Image 1 (spheres, one colour):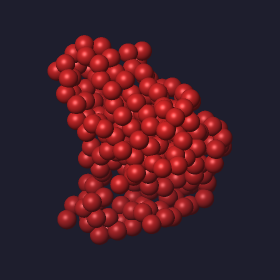
Image 2: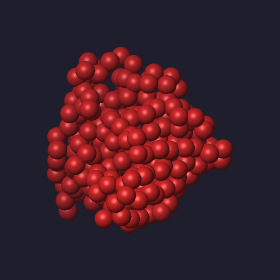
Image 3: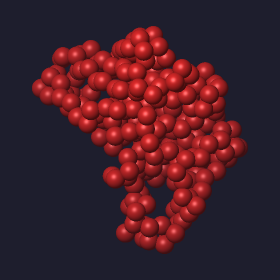
Image 4: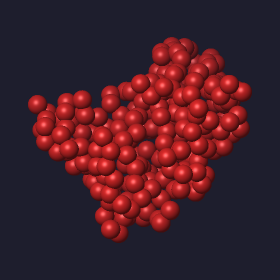
Length: 119
Length: 111
């Protein structure tokens, strides 16, 4: 158990809909990262928040957005869903924010994931 | 795109050492080598990381060549529970926010 929690575990929805995935980081971690893992693309970094602010952006679609709240939990919002958005979505957390922090502080601990199925 | 090359799959007998190679020939001086693994569809799990010296922890050992262009992750006594996909990742000290996962090596430990 990494200490990172994600809800829900499974989500089934229809094309065109909007969903929200939730992540609670490990106690004391300030960074939250979101990743998408689909069968054909592998694990892809989407976005990172550090202490409430966006820190880094990866291959995140414009239909997707995220935020980190004052209590440090994060939500990933996926809208206008398409069949191709079906994937595992992982959240990870770390103590540090990246950029120049000692490597120890940037070890990422992953949650169990949310499996999204778009029908 | 990942900056590492790994064999797509490997087998290992239970109880034997599993040696997983990784090529990172374009690694630069401020980049670390990290290893993660993913068991079935669980979240990836951190294993070990290193810069240029060999490293060991309770899970594994990491051997980095002197020129740093390749490394080997060693699981000293593989068990069936070590069956997983192993990812070798290169991350910069200065910009280490995102991790670029490649396809990894699918290790199958056989009884």
